[in-house]
Length: 394
Image (cartoon, rainbow, N blue to C red; front, side, top):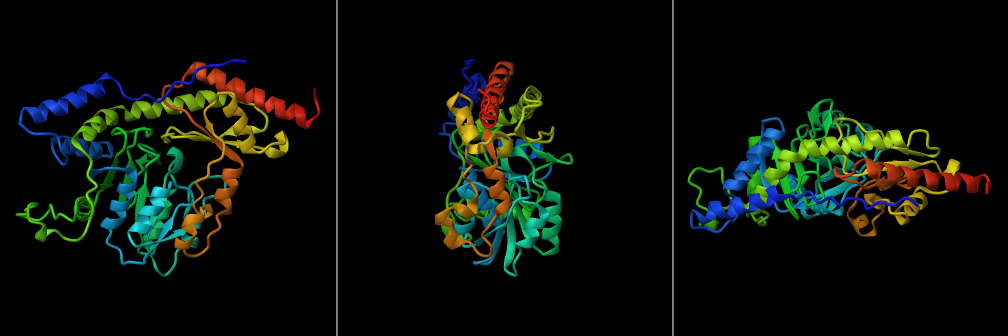
């Protein structure tokens, strides 16, 4: 059997060590220890805004979950307001809604997709709906322009969860710039990372930015003239300390410079793999676009042609050394612990069907021709084995 050692992500390089040393030198020269909300976060926020098109404001926070939490908190919605949520996402997204005292209402995805569509979004709007959290899953943009148009007609605020889609575009416009405010995860597995954990809140609304900073740092009104952070009596409201440290921000600066190259290399890998798998019976990669920022990639399986489920096919590939997630158990409405918090219709048949007929291929920007050959060989072998069994061919 053909085998290959799949390359790890390992996005950290010597220049990242230099970034850490730069932080220590900068603060040592000033007789200080590196903390947070300092020189490197300011630089990082400026460069993040530049990457997003040069307009707006950014604040670095400690995790992607914190970014979603802060983005929602900055809207200052009435307690108990309904928030329409994409059907497939991380538990942190749902938890951020609940811990803000808001009520999640899960909408379905579009057929053949993990992403919510405008029709599915509008169908779950209630009289109590005040916001939506729209997830761009796996690095592919949702139809966010149409969703925002629907939201505007209903006076609904839109939070974009771009945790898996750094740099993805829709019709040339970068995700995170469509809604009222956006949240990004910058944990170590993401295309853009600030180290082990991290997150960014981004908005083009100055007032939302000022509120987000207060929500991320104990209610401090940084925007008020004469604000004294040594006087807690002048703080605005109860809030947690969700800041990101200076070392992580320095790592983020380096990572941000590599993001477009990372995105291009991932897209190139998927396109070449799609060519390698051309004509493979019963199995197909989801389409990939130059506007995507792939995080994982769905592979659909025709169970009628192959006589096996997508999960079974993915599990066999996994056993042969291909990196996959055979069964993507992130359909929100199927989690028992979240059901008591949900309102309205809880079934998401499109999302469940997409999950059941696909598995997710895992990869990174270090994959190249040897990995394409190995993965292609394993796909063809597994597909061929199932077809022969289904047709009773020895």
